Image: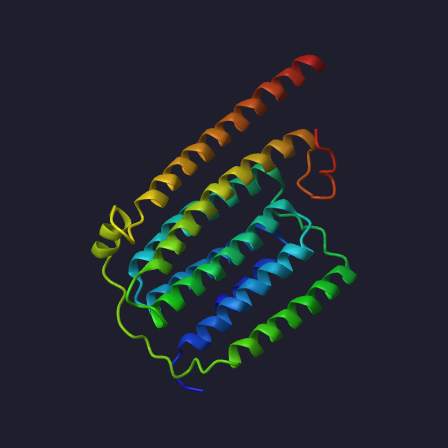
Length: 104
Length: 166
């Protein structure tokens, strides 16, 4: 194992972040914190895209563009999800997922 | 730093603190991009996540609940089961990563400056990204209109409810 951090360490960090996101998504019962966990998972995917692009295929910057598009879609998704959460909160006065058991 | 703050972000019982821990985790990830010499993506990360999404999350926390109060603790069996699944998954991934001789790989060069990235993003030739770029613009417009529609609908509904109760 080399002392200088390389691709190996970056992959370890990104998988750690991904599984922490999964843990949060499974244990939390609060919609905003579940959204935060989803953001963590998307971020770990971004780290992997950029790392593989830098270390394995530096001749074209496709991973960078994928990361940019993921970040953009994550921002749009967070905005829509928060609008829905606030709407739901005004309807049922709670953001717990177990209370949101009606479709209407 | 990234791992510990991400861990705190998913385990903290106060929702506001969880948001702040998530903020530090995202800043750490931006630092990782700086380490990989990707200044542009690091700047995008800081602007969009730290400046946009975290602020949005904190706004929604203040709008929806009392930020000082504790959240419900997850049930014990649920945290044990998901913790076990997550640890198993992480170890499995670690083993998969160990299968490859990743340590010998050195960064083979730089990916290009922000100027080159921008030219490739808007290029119409093969390998250009003009079509996804435009589609993303359309998606953002649709998301914005959707948010406005939902917000306006809420207002009408709550006003109607108020009038009905009055």
